[in-house]
Length: 198
Image (cartoon, rainbow, N blue to C red; front, side, top):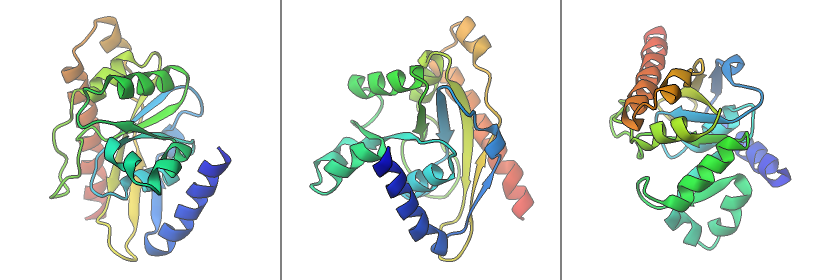
């Protein structure tokens, strides 16, 4: 945890002079308990920016290839990243994420699975709904990152209100349906705050 905070402060000191990160809705972030944070994905900088904006330490999936890079393979586990193979068929990664959620940790997820080339929100993989349904009592927190990432231009991170998963869990909804609900909430946040910025 000490290294995580050190890394977080270091990244913050590097990014803040270049991008002024504005945080909206921090009061919506649960202070305790499992949280599945689902965000849009517009840049490789999204994980550190969302991590800095989060009031709690966060775990992220990172593509397995990064853990084979000499410098990164020793650092990534220390900053709460864990490996995942392409897609959501990696059972070990699934178990890791579910165990984190059920034990009261925060897991950050980008349901699109890749960066958006045009900045628009794409379709979400069903893995988001799977984690939301199977993550115990974990809260699902929609999040939106509003760019663009340009030097000395502000980046805004918006934490929306938690999505109540009770009804979906009780009637055993399909992961695809829940993913659509999550993506619609992210889109609603984007629409609201993009309109405010125009």
